[in-house]
Length: 203
Image (tube, rainbow, N blue to C red; front, top):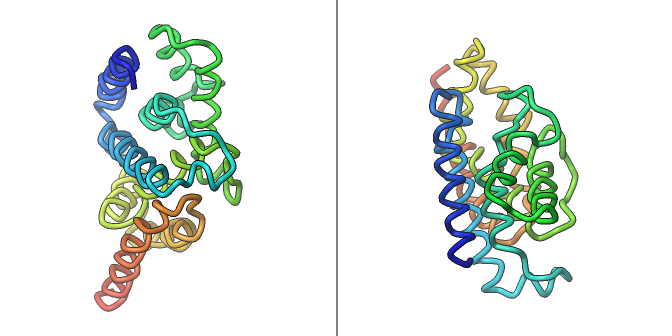
């Protein structure tokens, strides 16, 4: 990324830290930062093995996926009453991101939600990577912690939160788009299964 692009990414980090500062249900700034780091790790893995070429698409825009990852929850319907990616668009416009790139970023963001995109495969490598990066953060130890944080805030019992594992979390490994994410998901998926086994023993 060029220096100006790096500054916009840094501004996005500050923006989400302010926006999510009072969030305690697992959709906080730390989550978005983990999705960002997952995104960059998957991108490195995909480019290093030539996936961008074998997948039949152009090499992806690093700024687009970085900003989409950081901003993917700023208009989440569970958190905000906005429409048409209003928060993301306002931030990007204030940062003087070109209109065409704003549309690309919003397109990637709109492909992230599991509930809205179940079974849908994003058309672009950018979309595939960010969707995978978000889903990875729902797996493993972090995924377990986020599930119970969200459940506790919304009055769910432990058993009700565990049901979420079967409704979503255990399905994610097989819905990854990229080879890099699939490899990362396998270990985290195994951790979920081990946790459920222990939970059943102790219940």
